[in-house]
Image (tube, rainbow, N blue to C red; front, side, top):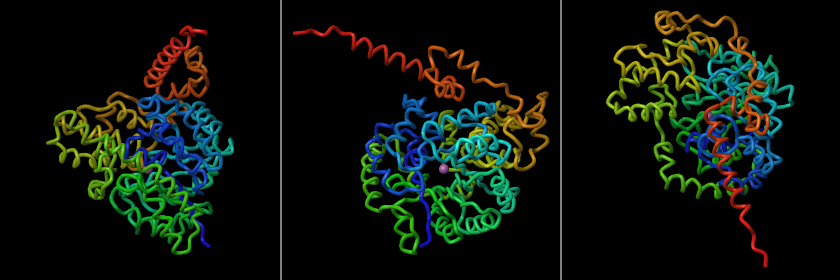
Length: 462
Ligand code: CO
């Protein structure tokens, strides 16, 4: 029997794509022992936006959350998404921070680290990959997939080969926008399979409605693992449904290793949670439907909704079409970066600024300056020279690899946080998200002082 693995994304990407990662730990704690028996290839449960949202909105320590998931699912491989040299933040960090973050992720329960760089610049994943392998984790070297004149099948396959040479154990193709067609999947997977000996993973989204067809084509081309979400958290901007894919693939002779009875229990558990998010207006029905606009604009669904909320906030929805036209132009100016975090935010904000100001690159974000300097690595294509001149002005471009110029910060920060941060993990949280973590520390202090007040209430003995 042919084997295929399914990664369940309900705790990370489905949660992130449909409900902006607002699922608190307590809401899913009880299902973990059941999920542990499903037979998933892995459970994607950490990284991406989980870390940031835990601190910013859920008042949860993301490390504690990971430890609790580990405890609830002792037999399942836990997987995270890591933004290479950006770790889980939006800029580059010094190598020591990257190494330490990887170490602590593994120490707290992670088995598989999917490591990507927004620009597919291999220098930005080398350090994280090296450290993860040393720590005994499985590294899934990841291609940020996109379509552009400079993104060819050959370039992607060569990148996969370079990652195999780094020692990654699997190759993941990350189609964050859900714009990979079945035909593209066949070509790309066939080409990568010719270049590398290690398993190939495909990650996509249902955004444009192609994902099921794309997975089918990928399976025929020999893909080894695909990402799916329990059915009530599937579809729309999320992944295809786990149960449905299991059903269909079993029928054509694949062994997914999954237990259909357990999958149903998992889905039954999440259904009322999904309904509650719908009822409270936190799950927009639009996120659950098909949006073929992404095929026209080549803009990921999440980015499209960000653009809309930016324009609404500035009372400028009449400029929507103009911004949609401007977005691919900015992307071209910047050398066709794949629209994934942090590039999607950068390109979207710049396109909006260009339209609202009525003049291109009149207002420039500090991120775009950093990008044009080379702080994020090398652009896939050529950055438009005129734009570069206008953006940089007197600012000097980076020489060599940007992270090499960054001073270590860990020990210094640890010293600063004496008496506040309780372990090295919390110091790392602070380094990644200083303001957010500071607020988290303050809220925790307040909470605990309250608890102390209650516990010292005199007890009347009788
Ligand atoms: Co995704």
